[in-house]
Image (cartoon, rainbow, N blue to C red; front, side, top):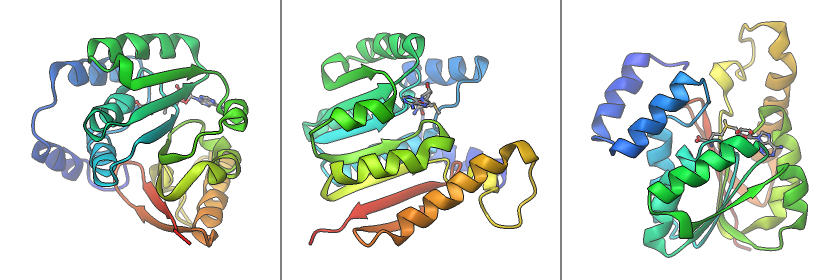
Length: 215
Ligand SMILES: C[S@@+](CC[C@H](N)C(=O)[O-])C[C@H]1O[C@@H](n2cnc3c(N)ncnc32)[C@H](O)[C@@H]1O
């Protein structure tokens, strides 16, 4: 977090109470240090899916399904379907159980495997894509995902400012050099792509929102 923790806590109070299932998942993720989106980001994803009335939604990086539930709850109302991908078999199995418990089993197709392989075999166009997987692979996902985003569709990516270290002249341990460098190149690629209009929001861990321009 690169802005005051108190601010995030305060903004979270404005979201209102989350239901017991989301709370349980937040506690479980914290206990096992599984990185899931903040409630603020989850709520933002939900709001965006509603706003763009997305029908086809893709998530790269399911983990235990926390962000998937925020997406799928919006999809339930837009009449949409969520496809989510994770290469971690155990996490994906747990996500399926949580999704069933949330009553969203029919709303979501969970695919197990490396997104870099799965994306090559997808032929659906998506109205909404959320990327939250390996930060070092973000550039690779981009080239595979660009052609799958429908004109007018949204691409949302989490952790793009990675603890604020993506901002030039930040100080961080050398072991993060590659990841931070990769995220900088990712943001350059995304923001220079003439087919997309992009903005980066400095909340959560940094969230980029890009809209595929309708030609
Ligand atoms: C940050 S977690 C996802 C958190 C989830 N979006 C949430 O907020 O609830 C990242 C997930 O991406 C998965 N992952 C990493 N690289 C991947 C790849 N190449 N293909 C598919 N999944 C990948 C990991 O197994 C991990 O569960």
